[in-house]
Structure formats: structure tokens, C-alpha cells
Length: 254
Length: 226
Image (cartoon, rainbow over all chains, first blue to last red; front, top):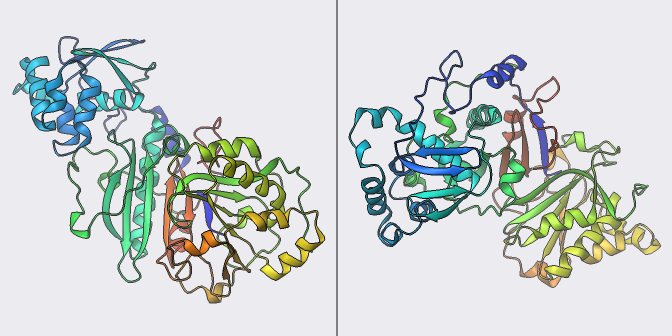
């Protein structure tokens, strides 16, 4: 009476192709090959995992999330323990200090520019797994991390893009995007229809199942004002959850 | 005739579960959709949940635990499917939840009319009297497509919103005329729509619906646990 579940049409061929992609970085070219540069051990913040150490550039978190996001300070605190300046000062100042202390050699280099997106993706994956700080400059993951991006994430993105397109054809307009947590593991893409003020929200999780994502206590914030359709900190070029930017989805005609 | 499933009162034949949403009443709340409905209303948005077959049997204790794991939830909504077919188990579920959260409010959709339920409840044995005793807001009556005015938390205007308790009257929520909203929980190649769909949304979503079996990417989790 008040809900329904449905499969939508993603072709079996598309599904197979997505599964076969090398998802080690979440990036891939048209043929599905991973073209992203790999991080080097001497660059960035060291994160110990049970699978070995990985190195991420903390400045890339700044790039990824934006300095206006109030959650950044908390994320940084979790990443870099024992550096009170990072937490006490503004998020932006904290990030710049972190970069200056942890990986000054990268700032302004072409290498940094080329690799920052890859670093940012890795750091996002680390955050999703949960990070426990141990000492300055290092962090230890609370649990083993598979840095491979789940192929299902891409399928969810295509599903979401198809759904959003269909809803817009019913007279809805993109309204804004909110996140349920600072790490942005679950996105709420909001659409409204001015004629009756009805609302549709797409709830999209980067985690393996939406059920898991919703479990910790989703707090659906109230919709932003209309003029705030591009919320603070949101950057279309690197916000993986902004489904409108996922132009490469394919919909099978049913 | 109102018949109960043969499942015991400590299990629920679940169609779907959403641990938290804002689309089924005031505040954040869990939604339990039960499997099986005798009405087959034309235009029903969930015909796949009408079949009176075993879909996913869950223990009442387990479901209560999952509902209580959401500290921000203010209430619980029953829909389906027809909740009154599993009234005893749902009543047990509410009792268990309220043991820990006495203020939890409960909304229940049903295709039956309240007077019919009351007469049935008087006979006893179905759990309906116990469930009615737990429900704060009952939205009753079958869905009639021609009377869907596109507003409120009811599917059509023939359905009546019964505020059965003092707690219901204290709710600051316009059940009859609030703008409709739907949350679409996006899975891998599938979705779950929670809420009373505004006009046109269902057709739009239906245009994407697969005529082939769903793509299931995580079989261990089950496809209906959201």
C-alpha cells in the first residue's frame, strides 16, 4: 500500500562489464582498464592496515570535501591524532597545516596534481572503513580494508541516475543534495515538483548494501532552501555521488 | 472473510523493512511491510506483496531489535500487504518495542474498515483486538484509484484516518492533506520506494521496471532488507 520494490533495467551485459572492470581505484577508462596513477610510499599520510601500509595525501581530503564542510575538522581529528592545532583551528587552516607538516614536498608539484584524485578516493575508502588514530601522522584502520571499490557501487550509481532521470520526466526538479554523515557514505538527492510541492528523495549509499548504510542512524536533514541547490563543499567534479554528473549510464529500454 | 496466516505470533511474514524514513508519518520511523493481502485493489502500488505466500519469515524479537537500533526513531508504521492478517505477531512486535520505548507511536494501514475490525475483534483469537489496542493511528479502507487526490498519507480519499489514542491527537501532522513524499532507496539494479507516491511518480518508475529477473548483487543479504 505504501511502498514497492522493483528491479530496474540494467542489461546483463552492462552488469557483467561493470563486474569485470578493474575497480582497484574506482577509476577506469572506456575499456574498463584502470588508468589511475598509483600512490607512492613516500608521499602523504601513512595509514597502517592489516593488509599493509597505504599512503594518502591529506590535502586531498580538503580538495574532496571542501573547506566549508563542518565535518572536515572531525575527520581530520580522527586521521591525525596528537595535533591539536588541526582540531582547534578552522577546518581550512587545519588542513593546510596538515599538508605543510605531512607532505610539503607534494604541494604545487605536477605529480601532486596528477595523483590527487586517486589519493582522495583512497582516503575516502579509508574513512568509510572507519579509522582509529594512534599517533601523529599515522592512523590505523579499525578493520581490514579492501581498497577495491565494490562494483555494485557503480551499478547503484547507474540505477540512481536512471531513477533520477525518470523522476525528472514526471515534472520534478533537482533540489539539492545532502549527506547523512561527514564521510558522505550516503547521499540524499532531493527533487521537488513545484506544482504540488511533493518531494522525491533518492537515498544512495556507497556501502555494500543500503541496509547497512541506513542502520547506524540516518538523520535526514530538512531540505535546503531552493537557492542552496549546490550545497557548501559540494564539488561536481569530484563528488562521486552526484548522479547528475554520471553521464555514462545506460538504460535498457524495457 | 478475515483469515489469519498460520504463522505463529512470534514470526512475521515480511515483504520489506525500512529501518528509518520520513515518508510514513511524523518524524523518523521504521516501516514494516507485511506479505499477503486479500484485497487486490486495482492500482495497488505493491501487487507483488499481495500474494499470500511465505516470503521472508522473521522473528519478532529480531525485528524489534532492528527497530530499536535506531535511537532517533519516533515511531513505527505497518503497511503491506495487509497488516491485519498478521495482527497477533505485529501486536507482539509493538509490545516488545514499547517495553524499551514507551512513547513510540504506531501507524497502521489496513484495507478493512474499522467497524469490521471491531466486530471481528470482539470474537477474539486473531490478535486484531490486541493490535488495535496498540495502534495510535489507523488508516482504513481499500484503495480506490479514482479517489486518489494526490495528497496526504492515505492512498485515496475514501480511506479514513482514525486517531485512536491521545498520543495520536497530539501529533502535529496533517495526515489528510500533507504534500506527498517518497524516498527511493537505491540498490544495485533495483530500488525500494517508501511512501505514498505522488501522481506520476509511479508511472515514471514503472518505465524503468525490468521485465526480466532482477539483478541481485549481494545474495547473502537478501534483496528485501533495506
